[in-house]
Amino acid sequence: MSRIKFGTSGWRAIISEEFTFANVKLVTQAIANHLQETGEAAKGVVVGYDTRFFSQEFAQATANVFMGNDIKVYFSKRDIPTPTIAFEILRRNAGGGINFTASHNPYNYNGIKFSPAWGGPALPESTTAIEKEIAAVDIQGGIKELGITEGKAKGLYEEFDGRTYYLPRLEELIDFEVIKQARLKLVINPLYGTSRDYLDALLEQNGCDITVINNQRDVYFGGFPPEPAPGNIRDMINQVTSSGAHLGLATDGDGDRFGIVDSDGDVITPNYIISLLLIYLLKNRDYTGGVARSVATTHLIDAVAEKEGIELFETAVGFKYIGELIAKNKIIIGGEESAGLSIYGHVPEKDGLLACLLTAEMIAKSGKTLKELIADAYANYGSFYNDRINLHLSETQQEKFKASLKNPPNELAHHKVVEVKTIDGTKLIFNDGSWVLFRFSGTEPIVRIYAESNSPANMEELLIAAQQLVE
Figure (cartoon, rainbow, N blue to C red):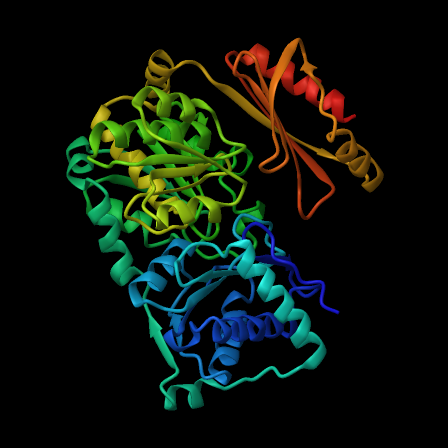
């Protein structure tokens, strides 16, 4: 019986262990069956891949299975960002899409990210149905395949360049005139991933002085996971400070997450970037609607929403829930502390390229640094300091702590609990607005602890107390 399970963003596994051609074909046949059952198969599927080892070859194997099921394939000519796949699904009115990517995971992982016809990450009802199909195909067999030559002859195979329509769409969403006038100096870091010739090309042709690093394919990603976390982008930080750049802009391996470095070399966390961009859009665009954040994301967003009189949506972790709100035009921006963000009128999928470009526009328009904009936000909406730690637990420890959370404490570090939320994990809200979230990983024996308070000292005190509670 297959053990293949979809996580918060598709199925990921280690190459050659679980992530094999046989399993890729198995999953693809299950998705093909699902598309036929839901009536979406006749509209075709978009297939792409990132810069990882064998991603293109895995994508071709998937194309062969779709064509074997008489489902037309729109196949990317080169590695392609995940948000571009989402854009192509919507532009073509396709039945869905697959990108072969393990996003920010280490080089030895690969993955299948399936997006249905609405363009966002598949919701649980879709992935549960696909998992049942995987189990059925695993038992019964019936994988169908067709080669490219035969597929082309039957009109089932068409290649495309993702940049053709996606880049002009970004130019519609971003005020490049403001960016041009500011003559921004930028360091661009695609982390050897799919945003090469996307982010850098747009900024260069719009008058920015750019320095691009890590701009070639490297299946080892320079020896670091392709995640724009501070420890993985030291070369970019050094380049920003040594060159006097206004910003450093990075994307992860498949271009759906972002990393931002301020002019002084400090990495500005996604919690701040999302909050600042919410303020920026409210003050500079005529958008109307609410804002969405995951349960683990800063409550600075809540403070902005309350003061500006817009609706706040709190979701479980996983951009699919925020994407659904974007698809329904309920929000002007939605984001997660793990560096996922999209906006009204764009794809219901996180887009790291868009986040970088919006940040550049915001800096160009304001003439300030990100640190100065954060200070302005604190002055207007209050101070919010947050952090996260991961604790590795044995299975016994994990089960014991899960059981203890059924009766959460009434107080932590002298902070009185006034509300307990269980949207995703266990979130303790305290009487002063501070909070702590305990959330278990779905793939590892890890509990993630998030904490936020109105001062660094209070936040640190809560983190320590929360860690002690676990231990």
